[in-house]
Length: 160
Ligand code: SF4
Image 1 (cartoon, rainbow, N blue to C red):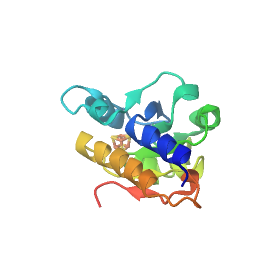
Image 2 (cartoon, rainbow, N blue to C red):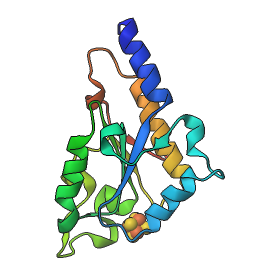
Image 3 (cartoon, rainbow, N blue to C red):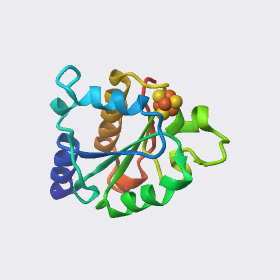
């Protein structure tokens, strides 16, 4: 990896900007994400900053199953993010469809619509598990070999 790529990876790993999207969650996971961002759990100590626009974000944090109504919005948000971009699926619904799997208005889990880089299981997962998933994703970027693009990094699972 040349020095410029090393600097870019260092910056990316130390100050990832994130955006949160609820594609059909019951709000349980979203409340845990908000708790993760409060001073009690303080996700910002790892440099993670929540942004309002996908055009400024490196990491898309998704909650819930993907409903028919949210599918195109989720895809559009993902497409608006600059490369390289990463997706964290938070909660059982986001990782596997959870309690909503098979419902008439539900398309399925997040990776049926966009690629996912990190999975955080749980209903809802605790803030510690969400932090674990984000940190594992960032560590996996550091370990990426030069010939492997960041987008092709192996997906990670929180709590393992
Ligand atoms: S995983 Fe549980 S808390 Fe999260 S959206 Fe699904 S049902 Fe709600």
